[in-house]
Length: 614
Image (cartoon, rainbow, N blue to C red; front, side, top):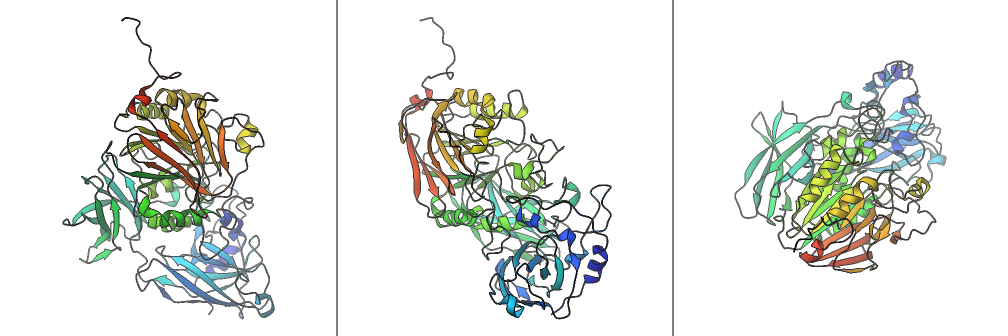
């Protein structure tokens, strides 16, 4: 059926549109290829889009498949259907970003899109089509619009009826994270309930114990907090209310259940489903501890919508492998470039929905990447536009990290026998900087007798990489990367340094100042005498080629999607495994076996001077 509500507004708006700029090249956010700001009004009486069912999530689910029937009197191979939310997308306008813009401007990009002939091979001959798309609850209703003219010159032909979830405001997509103390777990989630309507909290208990409730704080994001387009313009979408609760005084390695709650001011309650997590071990506690690390995963669509075709093709494989092995994972580190929303805010809901089975069960610790933070004139170390105008606001709000200031996204966290020092490569890390002081303090204050496994993590490659881009730069690293930090890694005997940013896998020998300090490749016994550097940026985004130069320090490379798993069996034995996302099998591994005295052993540049007195 034709849906005319709001289309008169659309017709008025389209008469005064001004170009926002050319779509971004391949490899950027695919929604940027939809030139919605160039759309023209071409409603046709014989065209229609029908969507069913009208109400989604009646059985309590937060995702559901929608069936579309549509018709176009003049079909073409470049006809496409966009999913819009809220359904009255034509009522959204943007204020001018500069003096050349003349408002009002149509200002809503689709959440996803698919070509009309995707599952209807006879569409061109019949003008009729069927399509199934998967929706997640995103706090508003949805409509489906049929366009001709391709993505670059879209012409609106028909708009569907609206569909909506039974409770669009429901509390959704919980993300666990370690708190600032070892016995604290934080729970962050998204809902449509503001503080003027309901009080957010978490009800939780140790298995077999009495339930208790912990209140949650609430944050919001405004269009004015975005730093530029598309986040302030076509990519803007209300991110909802972001709640965080702090569950304290947890018993080490104990199992807990929890559920998200909202106490409405009419006295009723809104509840999520019940979730479970295991509390962190006490720092230094000797128990089996398993850590997964990767970067640059992004998100993808299970319905085949080509919003992400060839952009993050490995994302779902990585997600699904982790879900399958979740009982053997204790904590996850996603080291930057989380969902590649790049200023299209609807994608953050899509991403938190995708990782929900993981992030609701184990701490999901994140680092800041260029696609979260970078924007000119906003204090980022790099002046590029990779965040699409988000300038760190979405990542800093959607995910909790135990940083002193989340705008400065560096922090430390302890997990049993591990100490993790997480750097923020989108801020200055060089000697003398505020972050450099934090990194040294994080490395210097760990008690290696109790926490023998010292791990450094960052998004950009501050160590070593054979990626073609870094080879062309001539340094095989992020410029100015290791010059300031390798002295700290060596002085404090960092075992492994992990990076993302480069979309492949690579492991080096234990190394210091470009020299391998240990000839072993798979079974390390005793002192490493240097740091092993690992690029684990193959989480899902399109892959990056290596240089043809044979670097002497590189032990293993893999141009495929995958992730790393660390298993600490005790204070003396660590297993490292690199697994491919497509099958979960191990393709590279090594072990470290040593005693405390091996950590203390002196090597180049890591022991203080000694007196000659006897």
